[in-house]
Length: 516
Image (cartoon, rainbow, N blue to C red; front, side, top):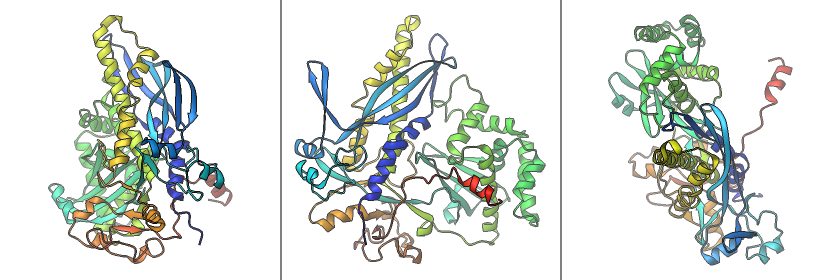
């Protein structure tokens, strides 16, 4: 069987370099603030591009040439094999585009044999000439001269509502039951958020939204009404569409609509205003001081509710389906699902994990630039003039800072420093040294998949069990003894991990031709 041991690591980094890093930059919320003169300013990324590892040849203070940097030189000199990250930033003043600038904000470690590595297109003889093995597969990083591998991690299956029964749900608050419907929503840039529906003893539902590692609970019908302009009758018809004969569920929906009306939430505008008013403080650094509560509500729906869907109508239908599945679970009409079952899991690959960190670091970089501009504007007062030169000065000083040092620290130590959590269930142990004791030991680093450091401390054995669904995907015997037994596994030789999204643009046309 032909098995390229590191193919999915390389392919995931290819996705990061090709389009993922650009999508991540576009996904970063704009920085909105006012100058001392009262003018409204918006800073937002419009593009991002990852370059190739190069060595600058300087003559005095000016760069006269650039030479290709190869991994063997980094190993010998104790360097990090990395390439520059260039971004374009747009400046808007009072809602009108005023200027833009391009600036290198940092350097990103480059995976060997990826499409940003100079070894990618070399022949066997050329690889040997550059100090590499002729059979080099890549898939790892060189950080300060040391070879490092980011391990595969087990994550919850994306964009699929999982019905869970947990006793700990009862401790969330009064009237909470053990029934919940959890979904991990993942965007095209692999940023993810968790969203959970909880069933209450009163027959109503609340939704738990995650924002910057904090959980916020909202009445379910608030979110439903904020997503659609339908009246209560139409909402009722959609909510009971799959359960037309269930009078209990119809009564639950009626009760939730009545509670909304009692609170003055009677349409989409009032629902958005009610949600925005509750989250104004939590999101104050992400929305402009001139924006109203309705705008805050729309921002929250965009970053916390079913982020993998682009329009509110699709989000409405997804939440309706999740609510009906939750009530079926509570009434015992469907079986509970387990996040420990491999059919409800997926693999988080090194390139995708790195992409999540880069996105957050880009957000931090823009936030730091905003604070520097605010301080400069406050110091100069009336004489301050915002231009691309001021922005380049604010962002250019971070070339060896937020992104460069942050990514180097992550790969060197395996420790994650984050505000948002990135929906990963651990903060350490992400990377390991690629030991070359022998070839099989070296290869095993790329096939290893870990359940997460969080589960190492759990007393339950459910997460360690070998289940029938793992057949053909997880090796049943290749797991160590002791504490990591059943948590640190290895994928089989026949496994292919998908790293790119399939092109489905022609699918609606095909379905239409088939009569759908």
